[in-house]
Image (cartoon, rainbow, N blue to C red):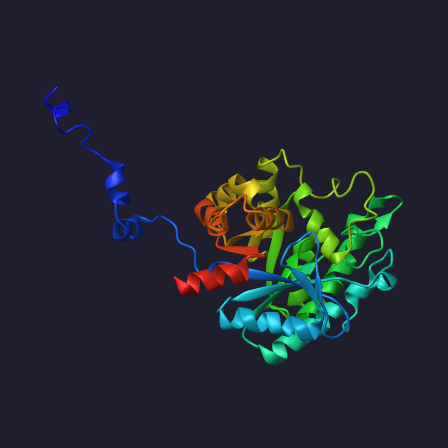
Length: 333
């Protein structure tokens, strides 16, 4: 009873929150510019800044304009950018053959960026969806995705990107065995230092819609979409198996996509494997937040709150369309 008189409660967690200095001292997670990767969309042409209607504030850029965006990232000390191409429809086919052309839009973008900004990291997806007329990540044979034939093309796609100067090959296709095949191909072609960031747990999510608008890959997917190769949103143990396989095949880093709806997956992966783990705050997440801010429904502070949630879950880095905005804010703080 004596403890109850004038002393209860003896532990007051609010004391640590009372002043700014103590809040800073006891903060468990912090966000820095070192955590950010900026995704950029590139298209053909010159002096093109083509706004994406479903992604407010985001545009497709021709290579000359892309360089201006990369310069902004460099000035803000963002460590890496990720390139996503919009391929003209007349250049697409069922095999996605342009993906293995050393002069394709992605490879030309890499070379231009490395010429002007040699020290920024470049991440490139390995998947066929931007290049196929059906929009799938793999080859469609007899009305289904042929996993093993797709691997042969993905190896070549990875090689042309790495030879162009890509620093991080990011297989996003979710074909079985692709990390091992790509790692072997890189190592056998004097590209052993090229990193692999595997989209190890990529879910068949409804949050990709604006991205598919941006690269023009969503119109011909069919009723099943990508359910036969991307993960079921109801599964989490399966994500652990996927990550374990990709690490055993030579992945240097792993990715969870989408981000905020799958914070539990990020946490489980980081806890289980202790490997560099990345999150992709995908287009649908970005557009919901951005448009809500634009309409006054949410305060802009939710941007940094959303990014911090990835750090709290255990992510080492975040691909986010908010990267420039977040880096500017962190710089000013």
